[in-house]
Length: 194
Image (cartoon, rainbow, N blue to C red; front, top):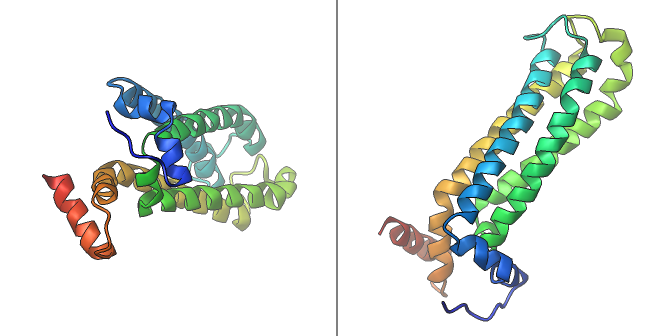
């Protein structure tokens, strides 16, 4: 198969042997995506359990520190696996991902969710000894919990939207010309629907 000479770093990644293998293999992309989804479910499940505890909705008698200790290793393990598999998926269509607003939104939200977690652990968590075993948690912990839930639900939405819109951006990249963004995007939608 013919591959154009890469003109951007994104194309260099996409047309690398690894990128081509993942994109063209009948089994690599779906296998990596399946592992990515399992890893993401692990991350979400453990984060949601913790967030619901912070909101006082579930596991009210489970000490927050014990829950954190029991779930954190699974959260980080799932996150590392999701990051590795996500990077492998990204390598297969780098150029299309880089112009997909849902991909860019997902990456931004992941960074913001990380900042929310860092703030929670550096500020609110310092007082955990005062409310560890209490069914009632301070407002700061509740805000962190609801914010985390909103971010992660939105991240999942954006992640699913990437899969449903990637064909549009693939076609946009193929038909890219000097016609302007709207014309090229409409051509991409028509191409994806054909």
